Image (cartoon, rainbow, N blue to C red):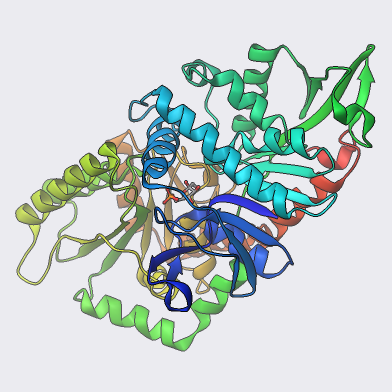
Length: 486
Ligand code: F6P
């Protein structure tokens, strides 16, 4: 059973049999959907709109259990605590987090509702896999009510250093919530390390490598149950495994789309529609302040200004899909990005040849693959990002072994995609140099780098990610060396 804030589909309009649904935004759904299609199981989540009530239903072979949220809960739990407290805090306070007690109340209440929904449908000894920062209290709620369950948690976004995390007024409760899981997964080694440190600082629990010994009260019901409670130095403990499991994509699905003649023809057509620029650069992001969209535009604008490139020669397509539009920081970012695009276009475009093609829209996967195939250079310049699956999608789509990936060191993907041009997006001169390097890169070097990147992404796909996580979860003995990274 999967429990995540969003279902894989968002409700758009209509009721009952007339209801219209579309694929939900974000990397979490992109990663989990192919995994769930291949397995039996239930997905519990919010249908993406306030005040809509739906009975459980099936979509594309996946059983869905919708959890309703009222308009106030969307404001306080989703837009408030999840996306205006936790999101900026966990992304290194790029934007200042807000701390409001009413938001925290709503977060607890909604986490309880998700936990209750899971409890109601979970079979005895079921595996329940809870996802992401919106639902960090759910693992403990499940364990308290149903110690028979096997509980996993995966955090799709970064987990911050203790100096930042410790700002959170409810820092202990969140750690307690997460420690209800048997396995807590993170994107990067650094995230798992930050979590273990927070556990030591706040609870004083002993940690050994990836293992955390959670001290138990003698009276705890689970002591009488089968698993994972042992005694260390006379003190009953339950061992929690906390380690990185870097997420990935359904690489084969992207390869397949990239081989489709219709999509290849569309890639060609895109270049023609853009006036056949010599170099096409591409950015694809949710419109989020963590993605470094303005930083890449600044570098691009300065290169035009310096005369190093011209809008006739080099075009930038920026897809910025709408996201969390009612949160102030997002509305403000949209204004800033759109002012920047207008300025650059005002200064450097020619008739019929805008310097930046800015698209504030979401697109189906087929169109995205056509864009990936059309783009000579992919810009991923996140200031902080759990993984960034766009980087992996670009690589998986480049079956022609061509294209250059410029990738931020602050995206989790940079731990694996070492043959990308790695950049610090705060260093605008460094970013400009990387763009120039990418434009001038000889074909042989492009192929060599892309081949190595593809080897990594194709061998470490999302199927492998989920199998690795689930193997660790069902393995009774967390001390098993197989649970530890090489
Ligand atoms: O991966 C991070 C994440 O927040 C997911 O949890 C989420 O589904 C996705 O990004 C998109 O964000 P949202 O659900 O707020 O639109």
